[in-house]
Image (spheres, rainbow, N blue to C red):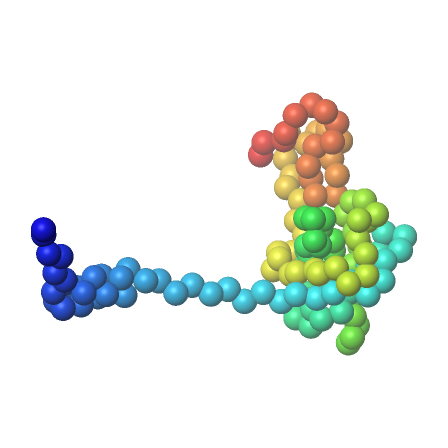
Length: 126
């Protein structure tokens, strides 16, 4: 019968390789909560570092624009159907300010507030 032996040097080398290959990555995300919604507006608390006109992302991917920055809460204009947005849902900052691309490709096209084509003629490439 063959005996399996593990040398201490082999263990040390394996640990050193594992430690050398380890890369610790962390991200910081500021998350707030919906306090109230109605008429295409959501009131959000907990996003103290949000900027005016910053895009905020709700659960499910719906985007909104931070417009009314008060000390305790933010008024967010919803960019889509807000029927699925409810009290207590999380909202996170994207760090991006709303911007819409421009160019000749947009002439005669129908787009949503984010510059995405909604006329059924395919995506717009700029």
